[in-house]
Amino acid sequence: MDTYEIKLAEKVILWSEIFSLQNPDTNNGILYNYDQEKGGNVVSVVSNYDFENTDDRNYWFYNDITFAVPNKASLTLRSTYLIEVEKFQWEQFFMVENILPILKVSVENTIIELIELCKINSIDQTEMLNLDSLMPEHDQLLLMSQDMVNDYSTERVMFTKNNAEALNTLVLKCPMKSQLDLTFNYTFLILDEILFNNLHFKRSMNRETFFKVVPEMKYNSLKLKCLQIREREVALNDMDFFFLIKCMDCAVQLLLGNNADYLIPISEERGVTSEVRSFYFKSVTELFEVNRKRNEGFELDEKPIDWDKLIR
Image (tube, rainbow, N blue to C red; front, side, top):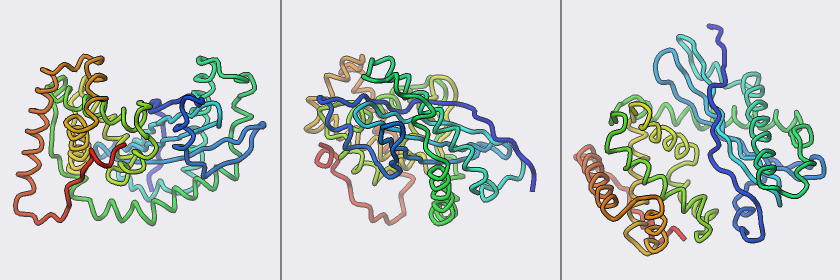
């Protein structure tokens, strides 16, 4: 087996939020499946992962950590790791001895960002928060690492095998700064409002509903990939395109349905005028048509989703 080096390539804050009496939905959206008391605080850490290879030598591992301190704040950070090696198999990587040190770095980085968030927002008793007081114990990190390895071997291996063709088939090549810039950005602007940002919506309930259709890690990966279009060409495989269609379907239904009264003013504030929205609908319609033609001849038993009814 070839030796390889794992490098931390990038850190991106996906979502952060301050807990408050005016924001009661926040605590309801946190999964406390790795609680422990640290420094007088009950902290929560949730780890998700994704992975892909962009060619035969560059393999990417994504580790999303949501860290929460009740009554203070919650933050989700994506740490991206690059593995540069030839003839690499993910089975070589998904072992506890590999995952544990990566997870430790990811959690440390997330805690550091959360403490900074609390400082910036002048949260009470922020001075009592530090890396040592919040860092989970080794046994907890070990358990989380084992869970990730078990998930890979029982779920992700089969998923990757069953969807190998979709994962390796290029469907859409999007030139940098093309008209799809608006299409991608506006889609995720709307979805982020109903899933994370807008207190008018029951966000934790919406996340539970939406992520059953588009898994959270796939949503995060797809969004970050699509938003790179302002900087570089974006290539979407069949699986990416499948989930992109789901995302656009939801966004369009919300913009044309009962939630429009809340989402249109937000769009206007962000500079998305009625003329720009018309262009957006035209672009999305063209992609829906591409998807329809690709599925011609296949018997699909999927039922349409009434997003305007499900999103609250």
